[in-house]
Image (cartoon, rainbow, N blue to C red; front, top):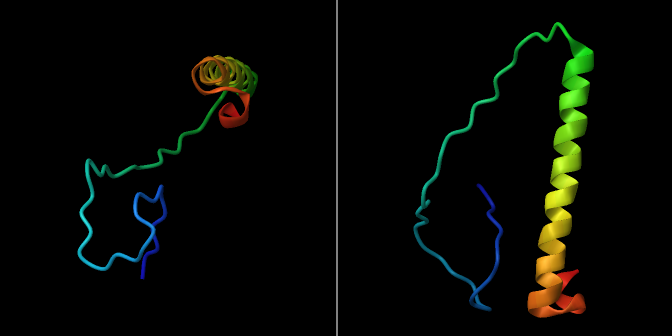
Length: 71
């Protein structure tokens, strides 16, 4: 049995067939890295970019819906 969770639009229980919209199979690729310092730097850069993007999204949410809902 698979349990799926998500945002509810109805407060009851639904029973029936499920359909997946745009379901894509993901594959994890493994490869050997020679330059670990370059990979660590790449990770740090990606982390900084993600933090900056999340900050921008939070600021936009603050403007659109206010502080309580932006959190």
